[in-house]
Length: 190
Ligand code: 5GP
Image 1 (cartoon, rainbow, N blue to C red):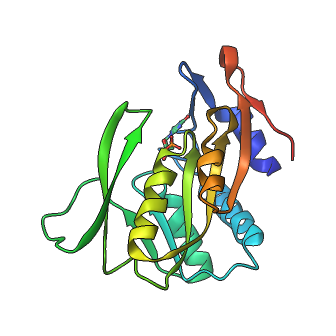
Image 2 (cartoon, helix red, strand yellow; image 1 turned 90 degrees about the vertical axis):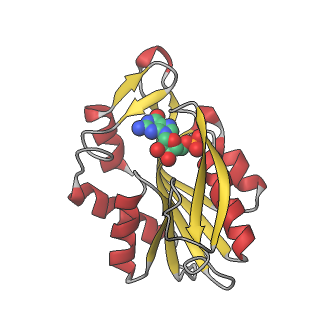
């Protein structure tokens, strides 16, 4: 997606350890207009797929997910990183965060992810695929069908796509970063 690639090159900042900062337009300050264009592109790519629910993981996935839900008129569920004291019946899994270098539990109420659901997962980044692995596990536990995963930015050099494709799930990303070596952003052409 050219508009996204151009924006990454203009406003993205590279950090040591293969981290790209996009907090000027995606995950701190947000550009709703660009987010809408991102979601329209996800919708175009998944146009022939039956979906009844959008899922994501807090916090950075919530913005694209709510935009997707709004445009498709579908409910949106986000996996929580802290179990609310009021949640009794839930599905739970563990995810390793490489940006925070720690493991955390992720939960979704059994009420909102069920057998028969056809869910599309969206998130800001695909890196090593740890969050994706957790979502694949939660959907499996629920008996829900994960019809696809959509990422705004994929860092191809961290190979998360392999985790998703090995699980037999379709993966779409709108900007693919081939390398961040020497803090230079190298993007794959469409
Ligand atoms: P994964 O689980 O695929 O290893 O990493 C994906 C998650 O880590 C995303 O939900 C995202 O929030 C965070 N993440 C991974 N890489 C980056 C990055 O380069 N920049 C930012 N801002 N977040 C990242």
